[in-house]
Image (cartoon, rainbow, N blue to C red):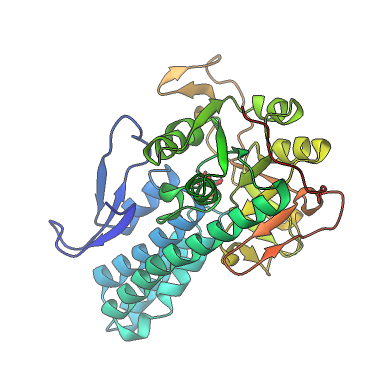
Length: 349
Ligand code: MRU
C-alpha cells in the first residue's frame, strides 16, 4: 500500500488516498480525500507528515484541484492556482510541500491529466532520490565510524511513512542493517506527537532492525554515555548556509554529539536545501496547537488552559552538522568542530 496515492475511481470522483498516520501503530486506516480542504486538514492534523510525503501530497492535492475545478477557463485556472497556494502554505517549514504543489501547478496549461502526470512524477522520483541518499549516507556513516556495527540514534520519523518511499535517515539505518553494519537503532520517542515511538518503531520492527526506544531527553545522555556512534536525522528545510530545521529535539542531539565527537548527519533530498533561505534565522518554524502538549490522546497532562510553547521544529546551526547527505553529495556545511576524527568500530551493545 502506498503512503500517499491517487485514486481515479473513488466514490464521488478522484481522491488523494493516504495512510492515516495519526492512527498508527494501532490501526492502519486509509483516508480517501475528495476535496482540497480535506487534504489541507489532513496535512495540518498530521494525518500525513514528513517533508517528502508532504511534497507528494501537495502535488496530488493540486491534481485534485485541477480535476475539481477543470482548467479550461481563466476562472477555473485561477481557482486551481488559489488552491495550490493554500496547499503550498498549509504548513510553513517543510520545503517539499510548496515545491510539490508548485511543480504540479507548472503543468496547468496541459490540463488536469498533465497536472496529475506531474504529481505522479514527483511521487515516482522520490523512491529513486531517497534510495540514493540513504545509500550514500550509509557509506558516509561507515567512512566516519569504521566498518561497524554502529549504533545509530535518530529522532522523529524519516522512513517510508515520512517520505513515501524508502526513507532518508531511516533509509540509511535500514541500509546499514542490510549490510550487516548496524548494531542498534535508538529511536527518540519525539514528543509531543510521538512520531518516533509510534511510527519509527513500527517501521524498524517491520524491517527487522534491532532497536530500542528512549525518551527524547535520554538522547543526549545516550550520546554522552558512549551508547551512540552516529546521529542520523532528516530535515524539513536546510538554509543555504547549512543550518537545518528538523523536528524539535534535533538541536539538543546535535549539541550533545558535537560535545562527544559523535558524527551528526542529516539525510535529505537535495530539494530540501533552499537557496531562498540564507540562514536558519530566516526559517519559519511552525508553532503547533497547545493541546498537543496539554493533552495526550485526549487525557490531560497538565492544568487546563496552561500556556504552552510548542514549536514543531528547531534549527541546528551548520557548525554542529558533520555532513548533509543528499542523493547527489555529502556536504560538510562547516569545517571543524563538527568533523570528528574517524572512530573505530563500535563496541557491541
Ligand atoms: O511534524 P512532522 O512529523 O511533519 O515532522 C517531520 C520531521 O521533522 C522529519 O524529521 C522531517 O520531515 C524529515 S522527513 C524525512
